Image (tube, rainbow, N blue to C red):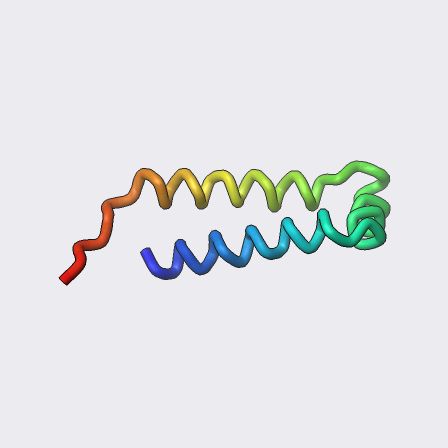
Length: 62
């Protein structure tokens, strides 16, 4: 579960940086012929990871 949490944090950071820096967003869109495919894929993977975190078993506090 720790690896999934780390993946979620990294995806959140990456998507935040992409949205924060307009030149980076436009550059990534230019790489994919004007369509934001990279941003969409990062967003979809982030949603899947967050759903897996919500559906996962809670860790026992010992």
